[in-house]
Length: 485
Image (cartoon, rainbow, N blue to C red; front, side, top):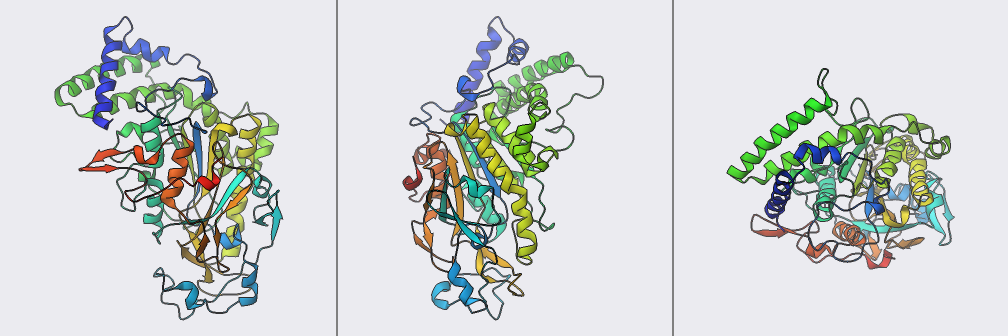
């Protein structure tokens, strides 16, 4: 079904409700009645006919995105042989002429910088984890650690756009928009796709992120992510202005809806229908979002689980708690962006701060979902847009170093619905520079996420500018069956 046909279908439903005994306003007010909290009890609204393509293992997903490129050698990819090669030049046989960023391409040398951090084995599989992630290390029996993800993009903006939208060029729908479009929502009073941008403690001049990373591209705009803010109204302009009652707002929206419907009947622009839907969603969110953001009734044991930062609005811990609350309310896709993972220098000063921001919160989110019976049908993903080089950028010492961007291999972990727990998938060479076993392209990663949610990535496409466009591109890609339960 094309976006235009989707809106024609929506127009028919709207005409039915308007022609029946209940008007638009009454229908909207009725939708505000209490609904079940857990998504499993909620009907699906919207989505495409025939989706999901097969029985999904996950009904929703939470993506913890470490924007900037976490250093795999210091976190998940243990390379003890590098200690004997400290300050030795990276061999040409390893680099193989692969391109470099302009930040290090002019260096006279590429000296090897071993990780200064201790790694220990955890879980039944003996997974090696850095001392910087003591809380996440407790999760290794629940997660599938993929060490062999790769991408072609070598700079931040194209790389993060690539993994979020499937293309390095801006303008394509994001992963969350595709899920909203294909699967619809399980809660009429909250968006299908919610985004949070958490505060961070590392280097302050972090890479910028853009709302196109959660945009809808050429899909109807109602499928774009809704950003929750940590200060003021959780969503901009959510509150009514002083002197405007909720009843007056309802009458205004009814009148505006009728005008927009006349415009659609005349012009046929599907974005007019998206505008109507967004106004109605905004009205419902005036009740649902403040309730969502109010964590005052969470028990102390839950707040303690997420750590001391959970009560500070905008922190990663606070965002993770909200992600759990969104999951139990049926939100299809939640994405948290945590910036600052870009240690070109002073890695040992900034990376520990970044890990402290997220480590306990990641553990708490997975544990909280698991304890509530939600992890079985919730997919959680942790990762960034690329990795870091084993060679040092700038000055090298045993105690401090920097690392440049490295797209050839980087880690991502997944857990929950549809994922095989307690495994390590893929391998890299002794330099964490090239993949030696089970390469996973970022398109394969997105295909895997779609698969867990019951979608065959080859069959979810939209015709745009004469092409059948899909999230995973036009080349042959596959869900990673080796990590699927």
